[in-house]
Image 1: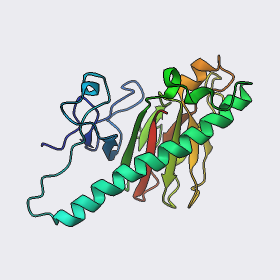
Image 2 (image 1 turned 45 degrees about the vertical axis):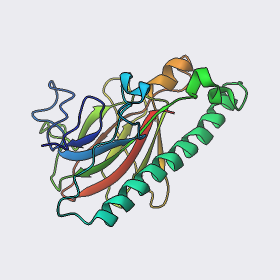
Image 3 (image 1 turned 45 degrees about the horizontal axis):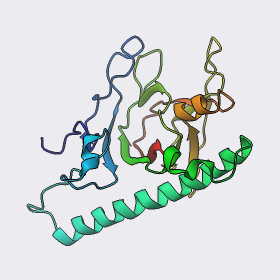
Image 4 (image 1 turned 180 degrees about the vertical axis):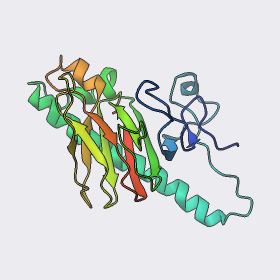
Length: 218
C-alpha cells in the first residue's frame, strides 16, 4: 500500500501496527492513524535528516481533486497553527524555568523544530490492562510538548507519578474546543526533571474515538 508510513514517518499506520510494549500487550494498539508533517520537497537538503521529507498523499484517481487540494492546504495551515500554539506554551515554560521568554525561540534551540501531527481513530472495542489490549499502550512522547484535540469520547488516562509502584491512573475528561497538553521527554531532560513527561494511555470503552495529536520538538 503506497500510503503506508515511510521512514520519514509520513503516511498511514494500520490497526495493531504500533506494538510498543510486548510484555504488557497481547497485540498492537487498537487504533489507526495518519502522519502529516511540514512539507519538504524531495530535492531539499533537509530530507537527509530524520522526520523531514515530502508528505504522503493519495493519488487523485477517483478522488475529487479540489477536495484533496483543500485537505492538503488545511493540513499545512493546521501544522503552522499548532506550532504557533506550542511556541506560545514554550515561552511560558521558559519563564517558569527563569529563562527569557524567547529562550526556546533561539535558532540553536527550536529554530527549526520537528512539527508533525497525527489523525487518530480508535476502534470501538473494550480494552484494558487485564486483557493486554489497549487503544494506546502506556507511553510518553519524545518532544517538548504534545497538543491533543479529541472528540467527546473518554478513554485517555494519565499517571502523574510514573516512577511509583503500583501506578495510579486517572481519567482525563474530553475538553471540546480545548487542547490537552502533554509534556514530553525532551522537556523533562532539558529542565532536569523539574517538568516531568506525561505517562499516558488510551483504553477503549466500546465507542469509536477520534483525535488529532500535534507533537514534536517544537
